[in-house]
Image (cartoon, rainbow, N blue to C red; front, side, top):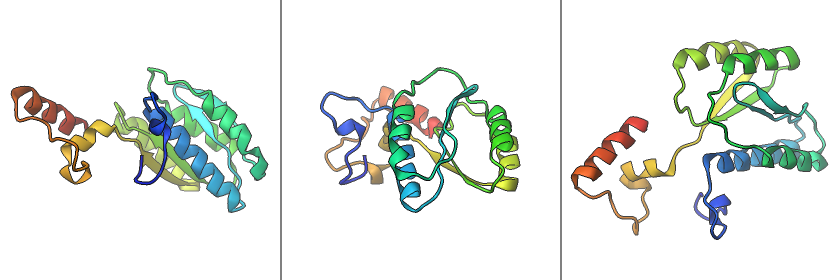
Length: 167
């Protein structure tokens, strides 16, 4: 969690996942957008569109987003950005800001760049990368003073290599 901000991991006995943080981020973005008078329509997708709410402006509808997003479950399948692109292009005629929350794990550049380039011709596309907290171990500037550095042992060395590759 950000300093001074309570997030999902701050609840006792609850281990936050990237999905938990993505849901929190999506809801915060929806709230801010609705408060600004914008229309918001979240899409949950992986290999296909799992849930879509047509864009709405009513701030009281934030509960609909909470219900839809709180039911999201992680799946061990890759995201199909081509299918998402076809879905958005067929439904969203007006220019829109599209925020894609992803971890970029195991994504082939060709699978994401070409479809998102098509979307970017009509819409503003923004990616928000979700990051594994363990990657912070590689960057001393992000460690809290109480957090120890990875040990200078063979296993610590190999762990740093794997984390650097992930980063």
